[in-house]
Image (cartoon, rainbow, N blue to C red; front, side, top):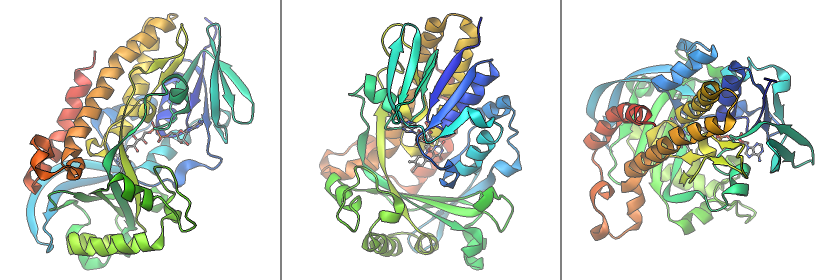
Length: 415
Ligand SMILES: Cc1cc2nc3c(=O)[nH]c(=O)nc-3n(C[C@H](O)[C@H](O)[C@H](O)COP(=O)(O)OP(=O)(O)OC[C@H]3O[C@@H](n4cnc5c(N)ncnc54)[C@H](O)[C@@H]3O)c2cc1C
């Protein structure tokens, strides 16, 4: 059989994982990323799962100590900064940039092409052609839409599958370990920290620092603070100083200075002082939280030759902490299905959709349930029930402990 060719749209973690796994089964793969600059400057903490570590190993990347920071205690702080709960946990917190670099470096240069934004997809018999914004065309046997929550590939064939705003945003902040005062560092740095808030959620944990360093003194501490924010307040937050409104998400440098000053003042009023201090010293930015569910993840005129994966297919709220793991499981399921069905790409894609559609739905439902009490702040109190009711710190920590097992169960239940 002649070597088959996959066009991967999107050069983030999902696209890179797909590239490695399809190359490992003998495919010729090219990744097309819209951004013109390398993506490594993107920074956020990424919780890891056993399945993600296993898929990295399969690709040939050892998940050693340099890939993450180990955390062994959950610490819960009340508003005055007192420790109200301390309990053991087992977590390895990695960083987006660290995972990106380890996946990007082993790929030969021509496989990964920056500055190539997909405009649309065309079909010619069993071949699929990507047409880029500069008019260039590339053809292959399969197009993989790993182009994130605003996927161009999905928008062309499933225009009704749109992200739905969850009614809250995540303020994020990261501070280098060396910029954290010594006393504060000794008190909280090594821990997975929750603030005791009933209708919001704020947590923090250590992650690899600049240059992906995981040695003591060179790490960073990252915070995520979920806050109910109605749609009109979100419009204001996403409007820059020149009055330009950025639909749904604003680049961090364009957030108005008064908004940053306000949120830092609110941090001091609401959060434990240790966390407020880190937040106050950092450069916070926010991301609106969305749910996205695609009714199908294998698309296009018959025979379908487009497969969605990662955030292009489903976005579960970040409480699940499994976005990257899901992208990895999607990529592995696609490669496994192709390997199992040999020549028969139709059967392979049907198998992929059968397995990962139910998994994606399950993760989205799980994330919605975990964030229901924050979303419900837009409803009158008498209309809230079940998971929409305010959560105390014990319930939150119980959810933290249960989360790995819940994700594992969803993986095991796949068709
Ligand atoms: C607050 C928050 C916290 C999170 N915490 C975690 C966590 O702890 N653990 C975890 O696993 N996940 C976490 N996630 C989720 C995780 O970041 C995503 O699930 C993951 O990055 C998905 O990767 P992806 O490759 O599918 O999509 P993306 O990372 O969105 O990448 C899509 C890529 O496609 C490119 N692209 C878009 N359109 C085009 C086009 N037309 N042509 C070419 N390229 C295009 C984009 O530039 C981008 O590089 C979190 C998310 C948020 C918002």
